[in-house]
Amino acid sequence: MPQVSLVDVASYLPGDPVPTDYFTQFSRSERMAKNVMFRSPTGRHHIGRDETAVDMAEQAFGVLRERHGADLAAEIDIIITHTQLPDNPVLGAGPELARRLGARPSQVLDVHNSGCAAFVQMMAMARMMMATSEAKTALIVAAQNCAGPVFTQPDIRKLAQAPVPGDGCGIGLLRRDDSGPILDIETRTYPEFAGDMDFSTNGPRKYWEPGEGQGCVSFSESKITKVFARGNRLVPEVALEVCKRIGVKSSDIDTFVTNQPNRLFLRNWHDALELPAERHPDTFDQCGNLFAAGIPVTLDAENRAGRLRNGSVVLLSAFAHAGDFAGAAAIRWGAAR
Amino acid sequence: MTTSALPALSDIPEEVPGVIRIENSDRETTTPIIMDMLRSVYPHDQIFGDYCPVQTYIAAPPREVYEYLADTRSLEEWTYSLRGFTETEEPGLWLSYDRLGDATKCFTRTVAHPDAMTVDYHCAWDQSEHLWMIYLMRVVDAQVVFNKPGSVVTWVNCKHPFYDENGYPETAPPKRPVWVGDFWEMFSAGHQLELDNLKAICEYRAANGLPIKPEWMQ
Image 1 (cartoon, chains in turn orange, green):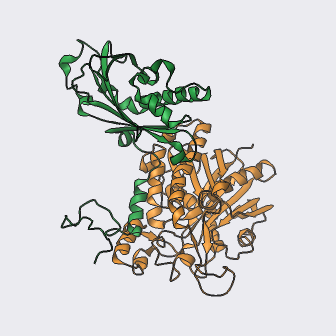
Image 2: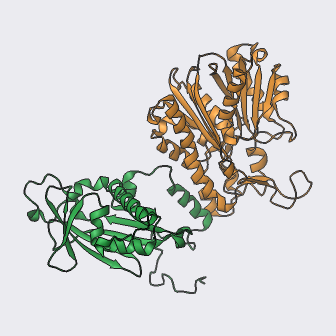
Image 3: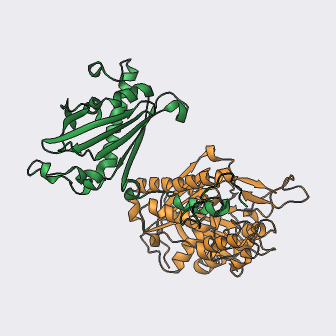
């Protein structure tokens, strides 16, 4: 396989941070309000009502264009996007993004199966496509845009989980070179856990039918601890597999970046890899659960802060949905700012 | 107004600190507490600090596994280091040698309850007056707990203070280089190793049509 590098990352967060007070005012009781204050992120961003996933991606790409030159779009051979809540349910965001950027990629792909682990899956796919084609440059895009539209609906915003998601977009630029090599990637599907996450309107109607009811993603109550236990296991499992294959002890990983569904997972995962919390940065408190955008947004924040050293080993790991997919990737960092 | 038919906690005038019941903590409040207690990894000390629980499944009939364990002489077979069991003049009290310690006597009295299938080994190094090392074992019919034939064996050891400091130093052989409690940190692995021995031996006998409690113990 040709050497493929993650040569840069960039991100975009929509609007001003939304404070937790926004949600506590709708809490059903004083006790719940306290709970929400205690467990939720301090802030999160919500995409604007008329803002789209492509809008966010375009903003993030603007940063890359500034760094890599006005001709960057013309170089892009592959675009792979993941959008949490497709703006148009029958088509993906890729072609529209290509049009806006002025790119003419040979391959455009919209992936919808890898949830919070999409950034890792998109890296794997881009690498595979570059191995079997002339393509030299790929743009991968993870857009999380369901916090504002879904979790602020009148019935949904009262729920304890409503303040946790946040919106944002993270993108990665991959090239066939060795400037920031992807050392290894592990992706695994767990079909036995598929179907454990629901999308319902909390009523009888299908989401495309007219009528009452507010759509939301949910786990049945009996599944919540099962999914939690799976997540505890899956992210370290794939991360440790990559460590083993690249011959690096997990405790020697320089930076570990994961998806960030809640504080407990973050604690448990770096504990499991025997890493101190400071080597497992996150943006949970500022951004909440960014779903698939969590990894690139946090990578970008760390990189801009100068905390990712060239030559250091960065390990990415995440699991999707109720555990039906997990992936991990190791990179020899080469995009330090 | 109480929702309980029983006068639960009516003898205590105030809320007992640390008691979490649905009356003072609804499910919405309690779930995060429970989630917080679930981890990917658990520090060894948190699991095996003052208790050493190990357990296994054995593909052999529970009653027979129980009867085997209830005979003190089974320890001659499945423990790692207790050897040379002979019954003392005191009925039910057995003497063996723990080969972990040089020429160390180990006394054992087995207290077994056939109805509950519990087997407690009361043991001590060096002396038989105070059998303070107590190994609590229980055999459970796997049909009941796993819906399959066989046995589940649980084994708990509690860290008596004498593990830290020999309560009867005068009975120890002179210049013995080790004390049983020196190995406490290894007990979880050591006990598991012994339990794995028990499993292997019982399963071998069961698979080969041999009585779990061998002829020589009858």
